[in-house]
Length: 381
Length: 138
Ligand SMILES: [Zn+2]
Image 1 (cartoon, helix red, strand yellow):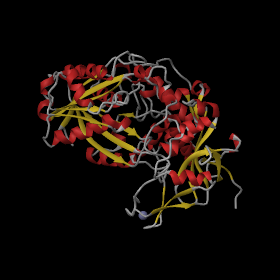
Image 2 (cartoon, helix red, strand yellow):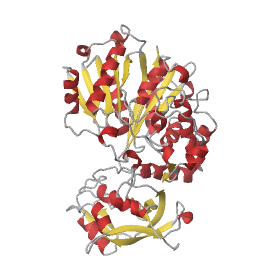
Image 3 (cartoon, rainbow over the protein chains, first blue to last red):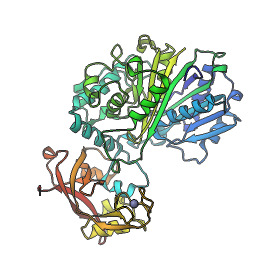
Image 4 (cartoon, each protein chain N blue to C red):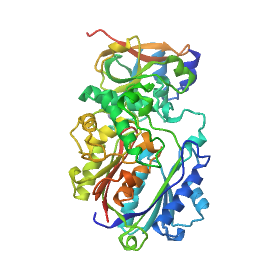
């Protein structure tokens, strides 16, 4: 895909550990910022895609969002693809724009879950509820516990160590320290990570996704309109996706994930190789997703993710800087942040955390532990 | 064990035989009469051949530890009380996996791939929760 569809505006609400804002307030705050960033008016949006928020159980949340924005687009649809939802929405949008169905699409992902679930320990301990709960709730299968199950298997299969997993949190904190917007900026050592309380072995508290409120939005449009707006477009160069079921126990294997297939599709469409990508923003609820993504995206050999990160390859200045904003371990909770950071890097707006010569970027949305995968490759203008 | 009972949902019409069998200390899973494959979790139709002839069939209760995590933090009081507990994915001899706990095993002795066998913790008069413990290699 060559300069047909672009991200032309991004916006991020002031979230934080307890913003006091509702999901729709965060969503509209981010959306107004994204429209202003692009230089677009509300009536120039043809479709709105909204992530189904965890903290608001409305059956038509995208239409509620329209009320907050006083918008009347052709389409307003909510998507539910877990942590991968913004990536899933961006890929659907790219296809619709490229084929001429809609020209300009506003994509919003917000959740006031820290405010809504105040007092609850949130993601650090929460249960994942689903139809199969009858076979999992009797066992206290927490979210960290589920990720830990695939991490433990990775350690068994490939010799990955606790130190290597901890290094992911250390690298992300190093990047966050360069980012004035990051929630946690104090430097961190592997030892400090390993000395933080154990939550679900091998994961310690400092390796668990934080819980905060967030709102992110971005606007995608056609080549025709992209050139006439405020900022240089960030072009969609390729994308791919691949899926399997939801629960862990029914999976054939924990050693092979759909990410490798979504990567293959994305790199083929982009006509690029992993070696040509300058920056990668990878879904990181827990360090294991970063290691598996690095491997399956082809940035390193299968099983070598731990050694790759330990050797400094994922740091700014390394082979492929990863989560240059700090990710969900140090920057903020949220699902759209990876796309926004990729855009920031490719526009050269990342300040002190700017990756050198960032012409091609990649972002990876992963959900259902690692069973849902969406990969997007971007090109700077 | 009143507390564990409080976090286990009431069985559905579909799943009741699983819990009843466990109550009799036998792990039973669905097996497809059409293609012979074992099916877990509970379904009304075989995902492989679409047959509706699924029957609850006792299985060996033996398998290996596919992966595990020792949990030190939990959300509900029931599981807080149990910490640290060993969340486990068991690969059964029949070729399907199930979520469970590994019990009766020192944490330092846990190894991925170790042989395990089902044991049952009573939930009430009729139901029990299947757990797994280390088994001697046969
Ligand atoms: Zn069948």
